[in-house]
Amino acid sequence: MHILYLVNALDSGPGVLLDEAARAGAAATLIHTTEATDLATGAKRDVPETAEGFDGLVVMGGVMGVYEEARYPFIEKTRALIRDFHGAEKPVMGVCLGSQLVASAFGAPVYRMRDKLDTHEEWGFLPQTWLDGAAADPLLKDAPQGLSIMQWHGDTFDMPDGAVPLSTRATCPSQAFRIGARTYAFQFHLEMTREGLDGWSVFRAKAEKKPLPEIEALIEPQIAAHLGPQDAFARRVMRRWMAFA
Image (cartoon, rainbow, N blue to C red; front, side, top):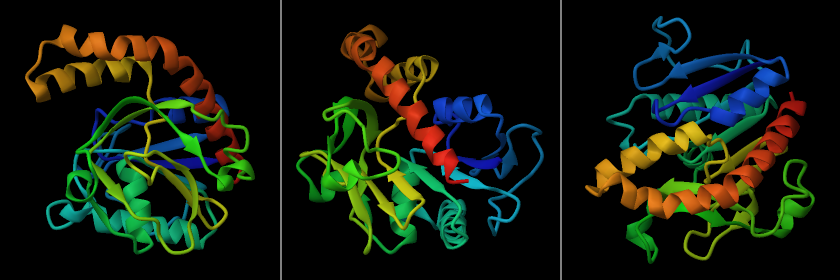
C-alpha cells in the first residue's frame, strides 16, 4: 500500500495518520505543496496530476484559504487530484484545510466563519455530535458521542451535493462528511500528537501576542483529558480507512 500525503504547512503534518500507516507497513510519499518538494528527498515534486501509483490520498491542513487559489497554485491541482482519486475509487481523507478542499472539489462553497457564523474560529478540544450517517459509517460507527477532538480553523464550508453529513457542532455545523464510499472530509485535527500540540501552543502565543504560559494554561488541561481518547479514535479511523485500499 502506498499513501500520498499532501502537507500544506510544515506545522500541520500527518502525525498519527502517518505513524499508524507506518505501523501497518504502508509506504508513504509526503509532498510539501507550497514548495513543490518531496519531504523525504528534498527533490522538487509537485502535486501529481493523477492517482496513478498511489492507493490513497491524505490532504492535511494549512493557514491558507481555499479561496486563495490565485496565490497558491497547489489548491486547484489538489482539487483535481481529489476528484481523480475519487473517480478511481481510491480512498481520500481531507483534514481541516484538506476537508475544505474536498468540499470545494465537489462544488461546495468555502468561506471565513466570521462572514456567516457567530464566531470567527474554533480552537481547542471541542466535542463532536455524531449524526445518523455516522452510525452506519465504516470509519465512525462506534465513535463515542461527544468525543472532543482538537480544532483550529477560521474557515468552514457548506455540504457538497450528495454528501453524507457525519458530525456537527452548534458553532460550526459542517464538521465531517463522506461523499461516495471512500472520500472523507474531517474539519477537526484528528492527526495531532503531543509534539505537534506543543508547537501549536508556541505558534498561537506568538499569533495572539500572549505569553506562552497563558496559552498553556488553557490547553494543557484539555490535552490531559482528551488527547488519549482522540489518539485511539484517530488510529482506529486510519486503520479502517486503509482497509479501503
